[in-house]
Image (cartoon, rainbow, N blue to C red; front, side, top):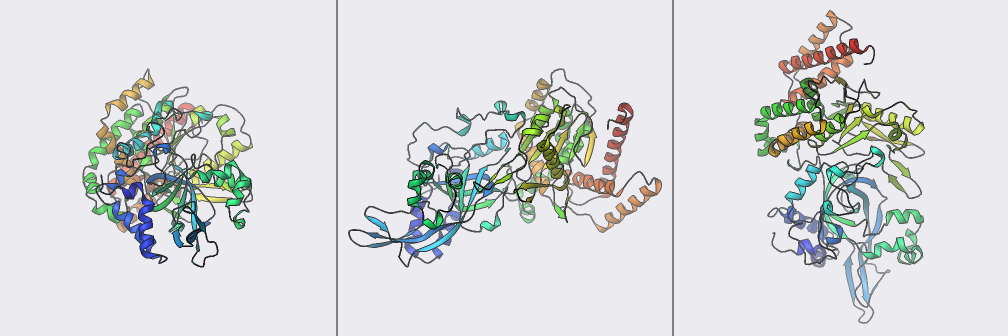
Length: 601
């Protein structure tokens, strides 16, 4: 445990110390940030900071130092607050300066009154984000973060909770066990993300953040009961508010000032945008840093056996189909690495057709994917879900907030669309809009949020994997037809034994492999570019119908993912030939299936 618990249990006391030393000199704010930065570098200190993702809110001491791993779901308008304000003692007439930063409510001691006319008062601005636990975060990710943290085992305060401490997964009213996930609308986002939604108050550099970013926040927890007054009695509340600020509608006040017991406030001291949420890897995988990181370089040196084991594992999961397993690996490490005009480059949506209907195969395949990726979501594509679920986030102007939809997902989420459940029926207007939204997500890697009078494009980077019986109704970069080599009599038993046979250490290697390779730099030398161009011309000569410019683009994407899957950051002649071979095998298989089933594919 780091020495001196005050910074954990009484961070406002630390802030007060810097403010008292420096007065109105704004340097005190930088010193506060620097102090906490340094504290977090000591003795694994981050592990001792209680996390709102794990520790129930009722167990955390108000105004203590906490952390939160979350996604920005909405951004409210900036708000004004009293940066510095002066109080007057009614008896002694003594004047005292206070800071308003990191606080929701002005601090006045006994006999003290706020001097609203003091020339020393300053008004500053802060931004409020509405943040939620990371949607679709995998159980193994949560467990790894819980195991890494010490705070839940040895509380950092002398605060006595009103009930015995329980972590979120133990709460009776929160169904979080993987086997008990709620099936609302048979396909809606799974309930049970750990931790509450929070109103996050940001004081510095808020322009760096945008909606759907994943953040790791460190700040001061505020659950002041006064914050709930707005909800309980709007008439009395208006007396507490500046008349200039009371132009909001009652609905907007209700949404923007929910009870602090349900939606706590975090006043951010330090915020970091996370590139990924894989707890097995360093938080920052910038190109330069990853080159010098010993962990990364040692892992890269033993990549080949990891890939071979993962291929074997996925081949079993895909009922003995090693070609489909190759394509699943390429899909899982694909990512949008840049955009050329509106075209997202690097995306690789795969449609696995030939999935058995009326089987639990697709459900269990999704479970396997869940065990490998940090965040995922399964969309069960039934007529009812397509017609009734809200896919697109929309703006509620009455409450002045963004109402979330299923497709509001953070970058690098795996979206698995199960089309095997689709039966004959009529799509109504919302259903057609939802199909269009999915098509736009796949083709352009963007979601058009509904702002009533206009649509606003939100670029995304979502790995879409479609399971279907015939060819998918949705566009896909690549269709691979499943050729099972075995049909297990009991699918659940087969998949469970497959998972239990893999050592946890091996599973962790798969998880590191799939996250790490998405961040590798990749390039093609002039020499190989020339060879590829010559190859393309040669193929067109032999059979002009055999390959188009789109086919060449796909071949290059396959070659890119294939190279990265072997830890190679440049394209070699060998990998190019292997990519051509894979594509040839895939196409031949599709042609054979066409002959068997007529025009189904």
